[in-house]
Image 1: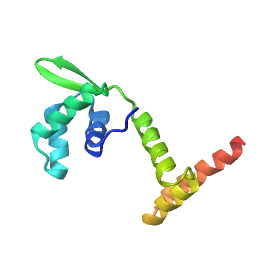
Image 2: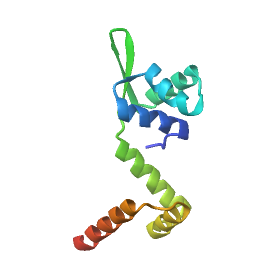
Image 3: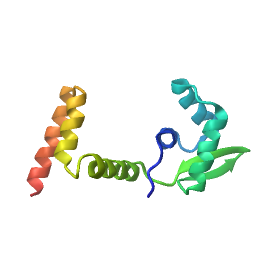
Amino acid sequence: MKSPSESELEILKVIWELEPVSVRDIHERISAVNGVGYTTVLKQIQRLTEKGLLEKTIHDGTHLYRAIIREDAVKENLATKMLNTAFGGSAVQMLMHALGNRKASAEELQELKTWLDQQIDKK
């Protein structure tokens, strides 16, 4: 699977949250954050559809889009690519870098501890 670009990923995140969703609704959500134009969003949606990542249906004259690709599959692909290219395959280095650049909340650290404990119990 080819990784989506940053702008394509932004569109996919809106679609995963709201699907099925119209271009207008996607544009409203995205333009509220970064001011991107309607035709730019439309063109990116068309490209995502051509790549086979979205499917389009028409309901009462409105074009609605759904993601064909699952959110967790995209996240796994992006994380694996980052892990292998930027961190030489070291998950520990990647995690330490991520946690070192931003203060984790107590809840996030507890969630991480719980996950690590579960990984130890699996072995």
